[in-house]
Image (cartoon, rainbow, N blue to C red; front, top):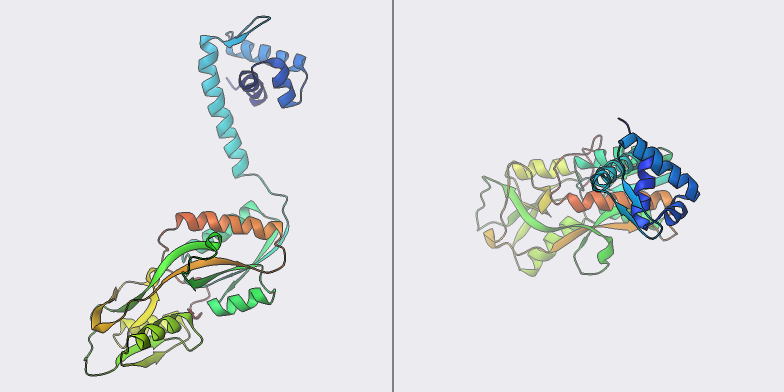
Length: 301
């Protein structure tokens, strides 16, 4: 037997509000309409669900059992409606993201947003932290994910926390009599700045042995054992190991991915995307390592 959800809602409303009058107000129906719906529901159920007197209203034993199932059905119905609801939000969202944020999860996030908000055009730019900051400042992006050193400020903007580590190949060897070989992207670069500041602060002897604007180039140099590099812990890949504290290397700072918004007021579409991004970031405690499709040579800084 299929029960009409409208009848189930009337029954639940009567119980929740304590009477037919208030249930009618909640559902924007007349009291007689609510009474008619409850009678129809009892006829379908083949049992009395409510005991009504001039002064009280209570559930029968069958009514108590029926109420539990009715709530479950309505909860599932509401969840299904939310899942496949098409939003009226329209417009465009210009989103910037670095290659090393969310990794393989990013396409799935974009696909879900497109499904939830089919009237919104999503324009995605994959770039460096510094380039994305400039685009947001120039009003060329609505919002972007950037990395910054953790300083305890603007906690609301933080999406995910990480820390910088020294990374090398598993079989990396170094003669302590020689300068330590480093692999960095060209300046300006946050990864380079973090590494150089720490090395200079510790008074270490080092040299740039490999320079590349791309993640793949730097990773190749590190995995080949040519040099070490400073990178966020989540960017480690197979064949790399953390060598913090070895070879006299100094500690590196904590960092965070945070959401940067343009100065002008955000649109409803941008707000919706930002909220979904926060939800995904909250459950993505450890990012998967994968290169964003079509962006394999993007810089990492």
